[in-house]
Amino acid sequence: MAKALITVISANVYGLVNSIWCSIRRFDFLPQRVHILTAERDSEMHPMAIEMLRIIISEHGEESPEIIIHQFDNGDLSAIASKVKTIIDEEVASGNTFAIDSTPGKKNEMIACVASSLSHEACEHVFYSELTTYENTRAPFILIPSQFINPFDIKQEARRG
Image (cartoon, rainbow, N blue to C red; front, side, top):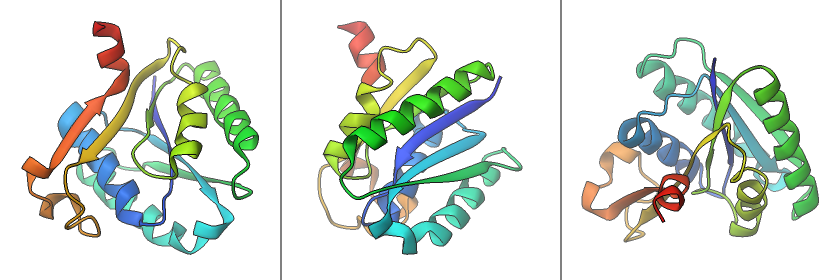
């Protein structure tokens, strides 16, 4: 059984990379596969995001992480929700579990992702890393002082409530 992570790239590649790094370090969620949904407007960030994620994930023990880019038209929420549902169905059919990282991306894009996944029993986590300041947001996770990062597992919080 593999672990997959589904997320959206944002206008800042560190928003994507740092939140996944935080999920690995704080919640011990090491994905073998990362699905990145991305609008056409953000395509110039793909090579940097893929390389950074491969390095971070492999340095934490997953030798050959698979990073998959899924493009959608800017602002097409139904396409995002449909794509997330397809990804989830494929991962679950393969016997895998998954998590959603809702930190990066525009909030309406992330709501489409979360709405497609939250009630699914194969969904292990829904991550959100809140920054209490916007200083250092364009820096690697390790350079952001920990008192400025407040990570949540929304699914875990919902189970408690």
